[in-house]
Length: 476
Image (tube, rainbow, N blue to C red):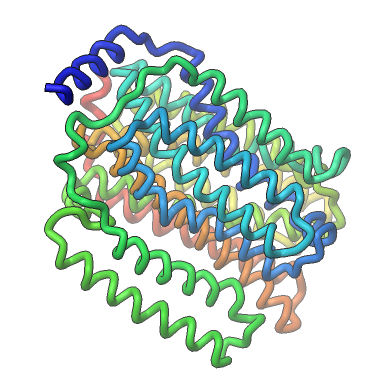
């Protein structure tokens, strides 16, 4: 009877609680804290490397590890949020964000810097699925799509805002101030969420135990793969270290599939969710489109190293991205309501890929290249804005009510892992080509063309997997 009374109390509190702008902005601040430490660091890489004395390879590893640990643990956090409370795990994410930022502020070498980045990845793992689950709980119909648009503004728009803001802060105040401001955002987010009734699944005891063995194997697989990609050129591609890491990755990958296929219930990744075709298409395309995160690190590094820009000047180039993504997210919401999800989702990678292609023109003179990059960032923002809300809505609307936290976690895992490997592949390609004696302009062009390829694969996945009817039921 106690469980029933607790459930009735929870449902009563949720029914009486009216979603309002305070909750929405608290959720958005949670997402922005992620982008402040995830994306701003990309734009200030040279300054950070010089300040704390780490190599480019170690810096790239630290950048990608944030997204990697976010991706690995986001499903865990989503499942635990379903069991123990989504508000509680949002608060936990804010606290971890503060701890991670303090580690980076105090870092004097790569150990504390990388540790802080890992903690920040765990923070994102708590915040992202929990906030999406709160949106599904407290908003319905068009209100939910509006809330998802603001969530997307915090996510996709936050990346542009934080690149610009991070460049200005690093140039005029010092890069450490980026993380001081992130701490302030986390504290404000916690304050705005105060009073939100807790929400979790009806009967947590009915859920199977979490697959911690599968998680462990999955983490080892991805960390070793990431080390091969980011440190392979440093270790030597045919060295014993690199080959050993590659072998460990392969063995653990096979072991992961063996373990997961033997579990009928409670697997680390609930593959039954992918039987839902709209969810499958949204999640795969989300992975691929987030892989273009490598565009920012390559373009930012090239404009500073190859063209002599400061962090702030490089940030100014992204203003078009910021404005266009913020405007187009709401447009994508309206298109979703009128024609469904597939058409705006298809437009996303096409426009994004066109923008990145403009950035590959690294042989242009300075003025013409500036114009090309500025236009490229505008198209990048337009494409991501078209894609964002229809994709998120398709994913969470397709998820069963008792698995919304896990489904949101897997969706965001796709985002994080896509970003992690996109950054690792693009940055490593850029560095390897320079190490082989090619010009920095050639290295940047090739590194950016890899991201155009990700857009093409994203377009194909949407075309094949996302049905034309996806999202149309929302337009009523």
